[in-house]
Length: 299
Ligand code: GDP
Ligand code: K
Ligand code: MG
Image (tube, rainbow, N blue to C red):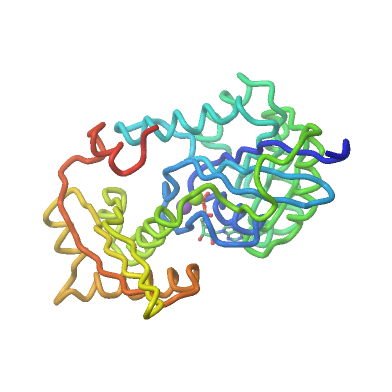
């Protein structure tokens, strides 16, 4: 291994909806982490890998937002996020381009002060503000913490993300590759499929339902002869009233979720998909250790 090659871990933190998943997808150049307008879409720690065979390899850790826990799932998400600050070579803190620093941001500043890992402030959504507003936002954040670097980007439009990559490499140690050059994620196809179904459900459903849903893949089989994937998935919700909403009038809502999910899964697998969706009620699954583990939210 040549001495110039760098490799290490970068953690992405920031408030829900600030654009963490969008940035990761942009950097990797492929859709892996799901995105939505509703907060707390990302529940698991997702590792994605960026490899430049000449420069190095970055393993990105997409964390759930750091926030105060309200139930066991919340606790688990907070723990995963906080732990990932210490175990990495560099932290990317994504923020909105505003001068408003709320309780959530203050909480993150306190967490960052506890660790010695270098922190890059990534001011996202630069496409939504003027230059003056951007500078004001940067000044506001600089007063709160001594950042190793400050990089404004537009994750959505891929603006300045190449500069961000350069800055990330600056803080990585020299070392060998952790993953094969063509690896982009450690997520299984099955769990990505589950995430896609959940994303489509989140997009289609009313505000009160989404936080209480999980998706389990019951079976995923490839029929080699007809070149079709048969996938059975169950959407789990907390109340029977929610079940009714998810199914919709004459099954219309479930059909919409299924059609949108199938389209995207077919794109990902590059293959025809026969997707069957079911809905089940499991009361209080977010407070049950057993059910959380069952849905993959516990180690
Ligand atoms: P996360 O919760 O931090 O992972 O945020 P997401 O990646 O799911 O993004 C939340 C919303 O912000 C989505 O609707 C994105 O399209 C949007 N978004 C992300 N980055 C940008 C950006 O650079 N500019 C604009 N205008 N919107 C963005
Ligand atoms: K989100
Ligand atoms: Mg996300």
